[in-house]
Length: 330
Image 1 (tube, rainbow, N blue to C red):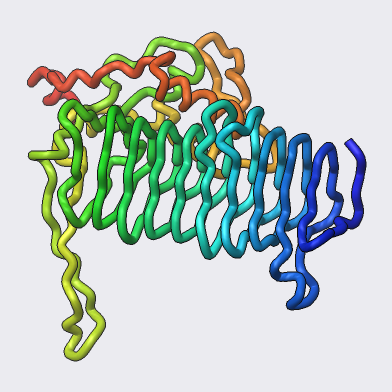
Image 2 (cartoon, one colour):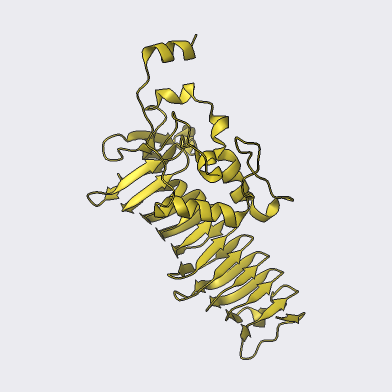
């Protein structure tokens, strides 16, 4: 890889391949706002990046600074290897990374009008008008102001006026929200992993018997809630009715479980903090040895194994004897 301290543009286009860019790629005058950037593989950019359009034909590629595309950030469907954005990604247009062979890792939030992702990990949250996710992991929340589509995904939570789900999807946090009831094809499943023993799975150990995934009955078990806006005259603003999908009221056994032992928060926090932490942490196994480091790459691989079925999360046994319940609250 050749080192570059200055990126030269010809006809408002810079093509990078086998390069380490030691500086930021930012405009210094108005005439440079229409410049486009294309990456063709094996590229590391250490500073922030601005482009009217940013196209990535192939990986590996690493963006160590924040990235902003005025019109579109696009990763080719045929991109191979791994493309990593360590900091926030934003655009006033679209983020399209519908990759079939490689993987794209967003180490922080993604903010755009339209977001379409496949085989991607987002360590932060997604903020957009319309979002489509397929075979993706989002450790934070997905917040779409118009429409959200989920196909075989794991998300922390979601909130959107219109939500469509396909195949099997998972939530990491106890609740999610939509204005209209969830639209789903027959046979679609939604599981909650808030009480799953992710720590044991990450360490390759036996899951705690009182832990597991919970199947959510999103069609019949949602709760409609009225959110009041206090703004306006006399404190009377517009009211919004949302559907809440939560496991909080259904899991009596949750009060009997030591949630700290699940170590879910360590895994999610380590992944969401990504490059912001100064050292890599591990989990302690039963024999005193250390697990794999909780790096963003290892956390991504772990959740993709759950998504593919390579790691199976047991179902939560909701049966609690009266004697166990009495002892828990004595």
